[in-house]
Amino acid sequence: MRHTETALKWIVGILNELKVPFEIDGGMAAEAYGAKRELADIDINVTEEGFYKIVPLVKEYLHFGPAWYRDEHWELLMMTVKYAGQNIDISPVEQMKYFDEASNQWIEFPADLSQARTMEWMGMQLPFINEVKLMIYKQQLGRGVDKKDVQGMLRQLDF
Image (cartoon, rainbow, N blue to C red; front, side, top):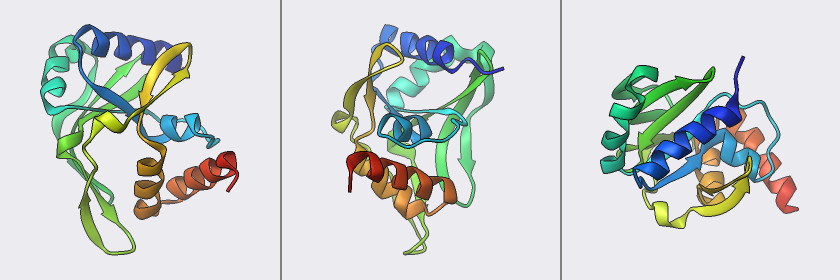
């Protein structure tokens, strides 16, 4: 059984304790902006410096990495920790690329964490990836789940 809120509070506590800049991305961010679907994992973008600070504090919960990961959609340095039954994917934003289905090319992920939007979520004030950046890259990825997220976000924004 997953305890998403417990896992989120745990990892945010570590990030705040270490003063690591971060933003919440992926499905949780899409949900915060109005998409409705079951959450698979918690995606967190951090700085490269922050990424390596985190490793010693999450070592006993590591499920993957830190290591390079590549599939047909993503190329990135990442680690997956599993806490309270919930997977948390953490990646340095400067090292991320995604595949744009329409142009058939790899694109550097926008690495500016200063554009994050702070919102209340699960009783905390949290930085989320900017909704425009989120919709653009999800549209470019072109996966079914990303298209659903964009549609849900646009409905919430009343477009």
